[in-house]
Length: 380
Image (cartoon, rainbow, N blue to C red; front, side, top):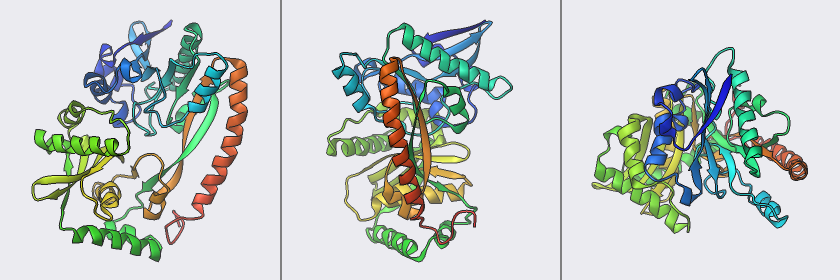
């Protein structure tokens, strides 16, 4: 018999057992990263996040798991369902809490159904999604959501799950020897614009470097977090990640964290924070106290591309949204989410709306591909 258990903290599940189920080394679903979010106050009930991680057990052994949260709002998800919540509440229902299979504050495609790699993987993925649905029905929740799924997980969300997709912009390494080799693959106009942007930054007299998280000291992490926080404040948003989270990433994740830094003397004036796996770099946060033309592109994109080339990484995923990334070598890629609305009538109505949204998204993706920055189509 397979038993489903829900845990109110990731630390109630042994790290070795959790990590053994990951199909790859995506850092966002590592036990260490998820535990840091909880331990440093980034994930907490008064912020709308209550850990409710799912484990499947067979004869007492953890055989599958999923990062799961009871959500009291829709903040920090990057798959927007505000209109669904409004419609359900206007009809007299309670949309929150809902159940979310995702990584907090991280619009990063990756594993969401941790079921190892073997003959029973698909069966166990299906068991995880069934357990989520049954829990929502039993607890009279409005819905279950799974965001930024891997392609090989989609089959586990069949039947009544609603399909939804979006577009991100990812860079792919085509065996470039260096940044000049990458520039050479672009059309003349895009190549010229990037050179001009980098020249503006070079003329500003800043010192720029990429540093591994494990090499940064406490004062450097303090400055980095201050820049991150100020960026959110300037836009009227709340900075979700705490200073102990930033310091903890350096201490715990080491050089799986990379930070592009711009300094004026010894003072850090801008930063871009990344995480990386064995084959992918993930751009996450940016902050600056100087307005230097091109500095955002330099730290967030060009330093990341150079790092990926230097270390033989295959992809660079700089984060959600941003058509401006297309002109800088990033191509559109589809992302996927799945949604289960418990009420059948509500589900049918949303499904019809999503069919229309899907048509528009397909057309948007086709249009983007007509504006490739490359001199030749990838692979030619």
